[in-house]
Image (cartoon, rainbow, N blue to C red):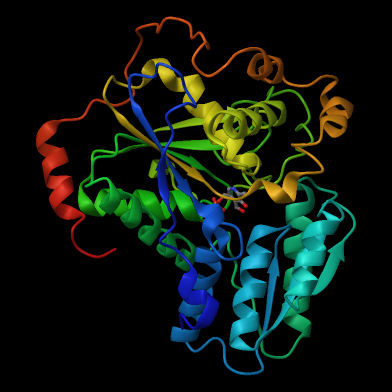
Length: 368
Ligand SMILES: Cc1ncc(COP(=O)(O)O)c(C=O)c1O
């Protein structure tokens, strides 16, 4: 099924980040999922979901694909449906950006907009899923990929982790993984377990998200409005499993902005909000990462779709009152002059038993 542009999905670059965390005694690599043809990691999941459906005989000529997405998954599905000649209805909500709707339409998707959040909690996500169910009932020969519950989503990411493991000979100590449906993290975790790799997986979630429980939000307070799409979820996804991550870091919207701006200023990578969250998570845990460790961050999408938000000073001032402190620091100091605080010695996050590493290196030589 990997015809035409779909054959270009995956095999994304893994690049070393040498300036992001000055004086870090560990190596950092970034998996640039922006390099997928539709612009995000969701190309992999979209293709995996449709391939799985085709194998199971769930889609054929005339099938209408219906899915809830405010961005990347919709774009990935729209791209794949265009190649496969399938009709695609994308259920979005009022917060979906005009740019994403324009991209979806350009790929030929039909747009169905949900304009009110679920009145019983669960935010827009639950309301969008209810709309998907109603459409699937109504449309003849409709197929709902169900990115939040379909194991084919996770399965697609065993290949993501296989690519990382192959590039680094199985020696990945810590993987930072932005998380929403849990497709990426679960696929990576399944691969790590199956191959016996000694990789500690850290989930990167949004403050206010409920995937890993209420941590990061004030338990008594109403869930904060999350302005940056991508990672986080208002409802725990069916793909979630307790053991997908050893730790979870909750990142605020402003920290995402700061992380994104540092990433582009120091590494020249213009990335989306969840990539900024991953950067923040590495910085937050830096004192717990063992000297000499190899750290990988998955950077799920590119920054062009966030020019009116994360990279717009007026938008940042309007929502947060001021620009993140890092902006002034970046302007004032050259890369060489940046000072970092001494590392506090605390619980190490990753200690790598050499024998497991060697086994892991052997294990990744096979296929995903
Ligand atoms: C930009 C971005 N980052 C991270 C994620 C999280 O990936 P997953 O849904 O596989 O957990 C998504 C998912 O939509 C995303 O769009």
